[in-house]
Image (tube, rainbow, N blue to C red):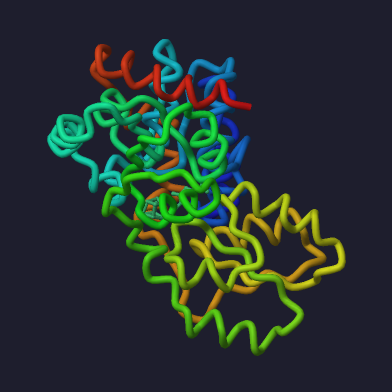
Length: 303
Ligand code: 13P
Ligand code: SF4
């Protein structure tokens, strides 16, 4: 089957199975193109909470599909490749979180959504890169533990001025954001605006004009109608997402590209098989799911 035939077959199966396809902004271009909805973690979680279709094919990494399943216990949530994990989520194991809770007894535990369901079940409230500042500001305490991303934590700590205790985790893709490549791109495109994801280290965020979640990057482009070129410091799939929405602007990835191998595990043939064979269903222990849901819903209630 060629790409066009696959796309047609995916469209047919989607109708037959009454399914909806959600995709993260880092997905392969051809996967983004067949999705019914694309977005960042927060937008996808909000969308998942309001879906009517009985089947959700989630094109993203596992914690995202898991969040959709937690919010939709009566629906079938499928991920086309079970191996599409997020190494950042692995930094916060259940054992470690429980140990920290014994040490930081009177602290509010905030977990980035890039965590496993059992971690979400242990903490007080979730956040995404799109709402972390709002979530931290909503907490009526100066005793906060933030996990697992140290870069996002550091950035939000500086923005809010709240004395947060940070976990030592990081995203393997964003941690390697190459300062020199960004400086070279800035020299080559002096008029360009630099947009960086808050999972990048401080030295990179300090030279960015806008620090945004992937979803917020669209808003940043809209806020700067005079700017024609943007240097995009995040996973390379974002360049496709932005170019599609703003065909009259130029989006430049720094020369040393950032690529999330896990996001790229979801391919069109796997999406097709996912719909055809109902694979692979995300199943979560109902007790853990119920507890994790509380911290996700608390986050979603913050507008
Ligand atoms: P966003 O919520 O900004 O899309 O980020 C998700 C992610 O995994 C970043 O690496
Ligand atoms: Fe996880 Fe980083 Fe990939 Fe995002 S880019 S899914 S944080 S490994």
